[in-house]
Amino acid sequence: MKRIFIAVCYFLPMLCSGQIVVTIMNGNTSVTTPNGSGQIELCAGQCVTLIANVTSGTQPYTYMWYDGTNNTTVSLTSQYVHCVSNAQTINLYLSVSGSAPADTGMYAWLSIMPNNNNTIQPICIVTIDTSVNKNLIVWEQTNDSAIVSYNLYKETTTTGIYNLLANIPSNSFSTYLDTSSHPDVKSAKYYLTTVDTACGTESYPSISHKTMHLVLSPGVPPAWNLIWDNYTGISFLKNRIWRGSALTNLQLIDSVSTSSITYTDLTPPAGIQYYLMEIVSPNVCNPSLKIQNTFSTYSSSLSNVVDNTAYMGIDENNSSSAVWIYPNPSFGQFTIQSGKTILNATISVANILGEKIFTSTINPVGSISNGVNHQTSTIDLSSQPNGMYYVHLQSDTKSIVKKLIIQK
Image (cartoon, rainbow, N blue to C red):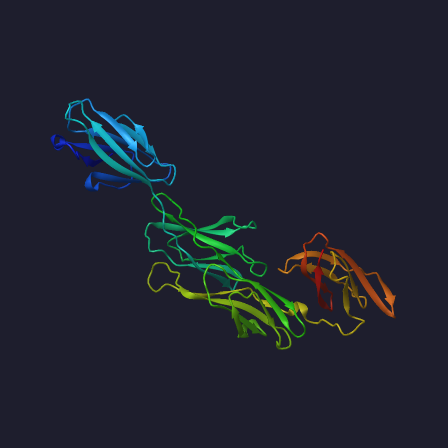
């Protein structure tokens, strides 16, 4: 039980030797009483019982507890019970009068407020841990000692809807490896909240961060086209484009503005090429354990790596081995025809994001035209939306990729 001397008689000199003593029952937070007032912080769902005891004036007393925030009288007895059910702070006024003519009134006020967690800790950057090809979320430790942990959320397949991915204790290293991520397939979006020790109250979300996802397609030979969705969550100056014949020798070949989402490499070297996008943060991230000199620095975000290996070995010059798609554009129903019989071949169709939407074995039955044995297969993708798709024909000896346009 706590006793708080929250008010003295403000207006009546004859009552100045006495005071109103408010006893707080079931309270577990600190209370201050400057200038005859008081403050109480409560956790959500917690209740406090206030009992007024008067040590001056003439009994019997009359009481009135008044909620000045909502302009309502809440109790006409010496006792008032208040429960915190929302984020509203109320200013509570107490008026006490005695039965003698001189006892015209004694007044006090008390603020009751929810224990809010206002510590919003931002994500510093999200990149890819290239050793395991998974998204790595990085933030810095807050200086607020009341924060006991962090909640990390990830956007679901529904835009704007997030699920809790992990709760990370504040004494842990402030990075998290999202083992459920698939950066080769799609981008991901995250935000962070803090949790305090007093009530387990969660803060508002930080600004969300979304990763880049890079897609490669063939251009007019020998060019390669890159398309990506930009990083969001921080401001950066440019997108940097890296290329190499192996992951160990990537070199910076160009930079484009932050508004760009496409790039064509017009004169790449012959052979297999790997591509990577990067953005550089204006700030250096220092995740740490709150122990001096136990930190690493992170300053950039990397996209997934793409390569042209799936497109190598295409032969369009020899009519006996060429592949045609018709009609193209189409309403979604089209025919694939090869210049000769291709054994053990499969056909797969992917959308612009690289997601496979169709897989089938090629029809082994063909026909002879101009002395060439032609092999055909018919595919129906009329249920798919308008857009560009990639048709991949794969056999034991060949890999051929063609563009398909669905336009209804």
